[in-house]
Amino acid sequence: MPILVQIDVMLARRKAKSKDLAEYVGITEANISLLKQGKVKGVRFETLEKICEFLECQPGDLLTYVAASSQDPAPE
Image (cartoon, rainbow, N blue to C red; front, side, top):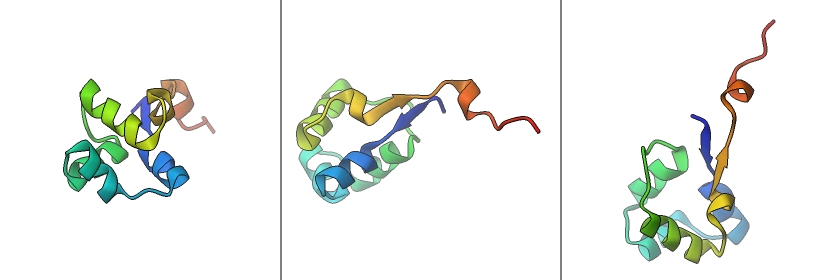
């Protein structure tokens, strides 16, 4: 997947817990886990806004684009 979700990195930097983030945002811990793993097809701007509020960050701190060619293993 070319978009990497780095919520876990920001949680670690802020010394925050997924449980607290989920409660603040108003979604389940299971959904936070799915977001962290990049297993969701989309996220609402409202949800992204609440995550950014809680973590005091910008959306770009949470989402990183990785070009498909940099994900492919190097040829041998």
